[in-house]
Image 1 (cartoon, rainbow, N blue to C red):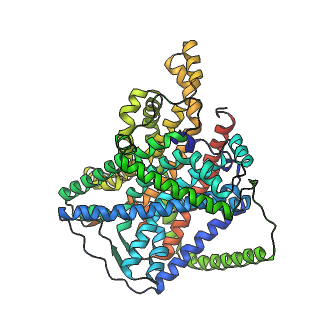
Image 2 (cartoon, rainbow, N blue to C red; image 1 turned 180 degrees about the vertical axis):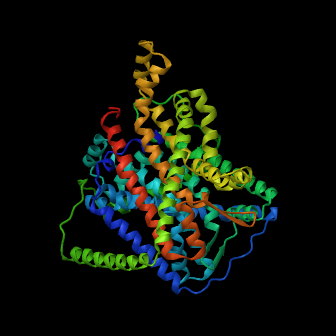
Image 3 (tube, rainbow, N blue to C red; image 1 turned 60 degrees about the horizontal axis):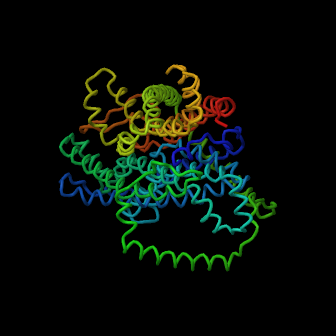
Length: 573
């Protein structure tokens, strides 16, 4: 249910054409990137951060610091998700801008946020505080988008009878959120949180050690430890860092995610209880303890008092699903000022883009095409193995009991942490960096496909399976007439997410610091990394916008048509 709830093909978004909202958000990204570039030109030099120690005894403290940054970014992502997704789901005017903006934001490379976030914060805060907040914000950009999409889709797919019940009981906004929306979306929100943490681990190294022009930022942490060990070619320390990382991921899985998944099973919308619900030894040990029961009773009393306080200030009333308001002169002034600011910023961004010579534009075009080929190859390879494995996990409970926990832990291990080992294998092979880049893209994106396919295979109705058995269809006929058609919408959903992740991963796959030397392959991600390292902000602006436009065009011209086909021909209904 948790996976299925968030991987069902979106119904509202797939029908939205290319609108003026897409133009506005692309223009907005150009203005933000231009503002970061201008700020970078005028920003004073920032002192280099502390040196990263490779002493094994520093690992526990470094691990704690990294987990703290990840947790801070997750809290920020959760607040953003609950607010942003709810506004987009219940306000049609806001949705026309917010959802295209979310499409663009998930395709913007993390390094392109550096000049805006880091230099903007450093202008008003001490250097160390600015670097810490920038790391949290950058991790946030790798966690928030899939959580927001999942929350938005949950709100837009709440069953009509539950909406009518909330209206009959006249729940106010808070009680509707607490009693209906959050419980209905809980399982999917937890699963998306697991994937968000996996995305955060993936970019942890990039967020703790980075260079912007002549400014070098270093934050002590597990990602910085692995990055420093990689730069020095110290494979003993790389192994220690990986061991600490895997131990942390397993501990979080056992003490956080599995208990939450076991607890959230109560929120399933089903008529018959599952005979094999998710379990957790830690949850079983804790939720019946006296201390836990006492804490729970205290929290329930506090919760009741808070609910009464909210109800007194916002009495129960008939809820109206669509919130609209008449436009007045204040809204008109706001739109006018915002439009004027965007037009002026867009004009200044164009002036910066004019500074780029034609040779660099040619490099951007060639780089975008090269990255497109790597993204396509990684998707094909991922499909070849995720479809059979996903079907096996989704349809065979014994296989799922063995492989699903392994998959969850493996998906959370950042590919960037083991990339130095992969690079060492292929470094002396002709085209070795290109092979390693495809492998890194594959490692970072294949899990989105796998989880979607598991969800699709789990959702195949049992009566259809029984029908294939009665008809005595062969294995191939069963795949052709039942499994592949049923999986098609889920495969497309996973492929779109994986494709966006592969484009984003190109910035760390095509430009690598290894053993004291810099290696890079031809690609748009490599150009973004080089522009960030050199402080070439016109090139950073142009290459980032080119990647955004490439992703949007591919989504609109290719994936949207497959989505339409899935919705019209292969939709289960």
